Length: 574
Image 1 (cartoon, rainbow, N blue to C red):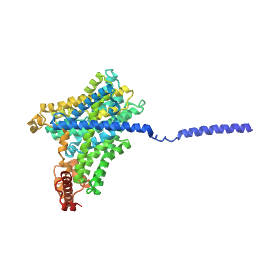
Image 2 (image 1 turned 90 degrees about the vertical axis):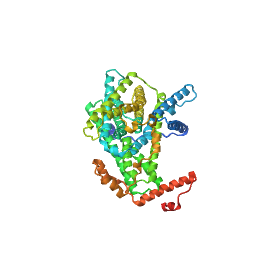
Image 3 (image 1 turned 45 degrees about the vertical axis):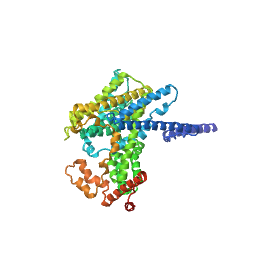
């Protein structure tokens, strides 16, 4: 009896243990996120030294590039776009460093390596935000339909053509074989256009402002769309899609893209509107340092929030920049308006210069895998995808536009599809396996970027002169007077649109009573702008003038040792 009881007890224990184990397995809580290891001691010191050398090397390269841009301006080498000059300098510096390493005089391999995380966290956000913030909103909103069609649907068309072409050519053993998601990822990243040199030429030759805005506006939104498309392809790569049909994959990718695009755009727009209301109702105009600090916080806030909730920080910060420029900027004091404008330009210039310099350096700093057939077919597909993007959509839009897109404008838009920093950084960010596939994508991207920047960018001005699309006044100029220096133009001008301070009566006379406003422009002038921006009184305008005058007089007194401002004005300001 005792043996039976013991046996029964053991059976019950085994059964209970098995049940508990199974239950525990079913309700096992999700594991906590691993805590990143904290480096201490010698390891931390070595990491600090390595980071310090990387910072030193980056600043040194940037300083040399700034001197180069200064020399271009000083000796009036305006025919050479700064992006082309900086990329060329990066190539020369990369060759020089390679020679030093070959002679075993120094080893800067780690310092000259471009880190994609640094690009997406530090360098790209200021560039994108400044693009949105300095946008000429009048022409942008008047052409918002055309710009959206080119940047969203056009970019998707280009990505599908390039990605599909690479996939089917690979299946036919014509070029290196990539799977569908990798092909689409490459097609998406290489569809990001960056017509920096072209925009400089447009401004120098006074081409049609509508053409200028179509190319510029498309390039701004196109960057964000290309990044979202690439992230979509990466997301499909990480998931196991073997049991999912092609149609289900397409729907899943479309849903992911729409969520990223519209969710990020809504987040950025909401952040910009909140910043406008905050600075409208909290008067920081008398303390420009606090006002400027608040603007910097709101500038980077949507990027961090969007990335934290798995949206696109680039898309969010772009729309935030457009909204903050349109509403928040006009709630600032004149001092902060000028400070914000010049600070953003300076930071964006340094980030762009750094990226283009490292683009040139990358020719010698990365292990490459070069396949002639892959490169040639990719260039053909990129040009063909751009053509299928521009020409059919332009003809379609002309049915709805009052200002038609002419065939000459279409050709210039196709020719101005330069590739720049974003495809290069995205190619390094792709987690492709095996390693030779990643090297092939990176090498091909660098060659396409250099091909478009140096060849297409350098040929834009002769092409514009050849087909006669420039303004009649610009045509009479001597070629030596054409200035392609973006930096010199930015430094010599302050946009009057960004320094407008209107009272209630002036705003009503200038905007609300206009009869030519339609659609969003009318809605904005009638309701949105009055709600989100401050209407100044004559006292506010007088205070702003005194503030500017006092700061100027103090500067002359302390720096130039000239006469100080009047005590009455200073006392009135206080």
